[in-house]
Length: 335
Ligand code: GRG
Image (cartoon, rainbow, N blue to C red):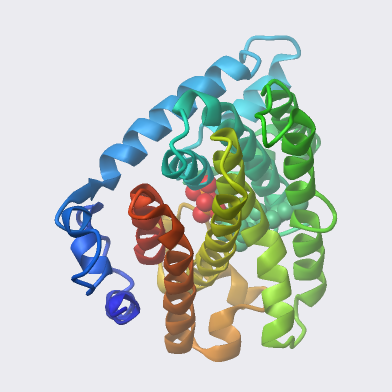
């Protein structure tokens, strides 16, 4: 597969924003023997993301209490961060995974909303003075800067709880009963995954840590929720065990690549582009791939992880085009 080299060359110029997200299958494989018709077609990722984001935003608006619902402050605060302009990558991955397994968007949509609520809660709490202490997120003042620390803590708590309320409404599927869906969400958000990653991240600040300790942090802080997003998408399509395993491998590797890219962007992009304070990792003496292995090697690592994510998709026989396009987009992203 020659694609990782291409990815590396794109990453050599990390300031270059991909002009089109339309993704040409031809780029991804040099093989002539399979999927010829698929190879000649393009996947319009821009349209997929625009459509998915619109559906997710509509559903979130429907599922959350209105801003005016008493007590209005908390509902305004929840909605402030939820609708602040996040990239909606976790919902997109959830919907794309459902599509790869021939699922229906309507079945995956509530689970896509649930993971976005958990993600937004984690960002609100991460930005608090007791954690990363940031003033900007998603191009806007952070939740606690607008609503105060007390309300920001509660807005995060409420979004986490909301996620379970939304997931609890899903009916379950023959291979994935209702209980398993809730268990999936709880395990990704809990003290062995998302919170474990955040704890290890806090404890690593200012310390020299090994690449394997850094991998432990990334697996939990970032990869767990991304992986959960694709798994839930697959479950909502009643996917087979083999498909779920493939989605797990894909989500794990895409999740790790996502964090390596995030660390690279922190040192190569401006705050304006990122919508959050750039260069914070260095100032906070955070353990990151660029800090431990340098920028060039970090780019190679991200490309290698993305190649592994691609390899996991072969069981879908060309039907995981949205997932493929998303993985490429995430590797090339500039914010
Ligand atoms: C507070 C329990 C708890 C966890 C916090 C989210 C998090 C863990 C820390 C924030 C910093 C960070 C680098 C997290 C890793 C995940 C990540 C890269 C989040 C940013 O995700 P994007 O880029 O954000 O998808 P948007 O705003 O586009 O949704």
